[in-house]
Image (cartoon, rainbow, N blue to C red):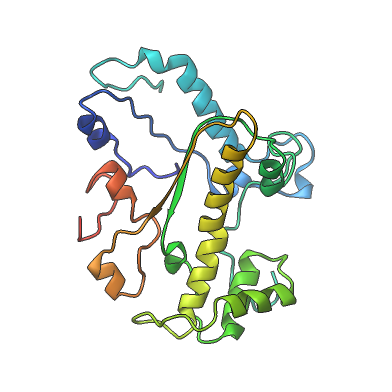
Length: 246
C-alpha cells in the first residue's frame, strides 16, 4: 500500500486473534511506474504492480508458515497548467496491462476474485486547487487528465457549477474538489464494483462510501477527506494520523 504507517495490530486484536494481516510496501512514483519510449523493450514497466503481484504470490505460498503468535514470517499538459498530482501511474505495457483499465473491466478481462473497494465523500478536497473561477478549474483538470477536450471541460464545469461554498476556500474550490474526487476515486470505485459483479461467474463485490464527519476537518472546508477512513479500518493511532473525532 506504499505507506509504512499502517499497523494491523488492532485489526488482529478486534478479531480475537483470528486473523492474519499482511501489510506491504511497493515501489511508487518514478521507481514504480517509469515509462518512456527511450527505455527500450527489455525493461519492465509497472514494477509497482509487479511488486504487488509478487507479494500476493508469496502470501499464497508462505502464509501458512506465520506462527500463531503473530510474529513476522517475511524474509530479510498544456503550457501554464499546474503540475499534475500523479506523475507516474500504471501504463499499457502489452503484458501485465494490455489495454486501458476501463476497457479491460468492460470486456471481462480481469481476475474473478472478491473485491472490496470504496471511497470517502470528499476525496478531491486534499488535492484540488483553490480555484476562483472555471478558468482556474479547467487547467487543474487538464493537467491531471491531459486528453480532456475543451468541450468536455466545459461540460464538467457546467455539471459542477454553483456548488455550496466551503470555509476558507475560493468560490470554485468545491467544483474542482468534487470533479477531481469523482473522476479519480468515486467513479472508478463504482465502475470496478459494477464490472466485477455483472459478468457470468462473477465474484462478490463490496463497495462503501465513508461519510463520517469530523468537526475540525469539516470546519476547515475539507469535508470527509481522503484517507479519513483508514483510522476506522486500522484503529485510532494505527494509520499514521488520527482525526480528532476518533
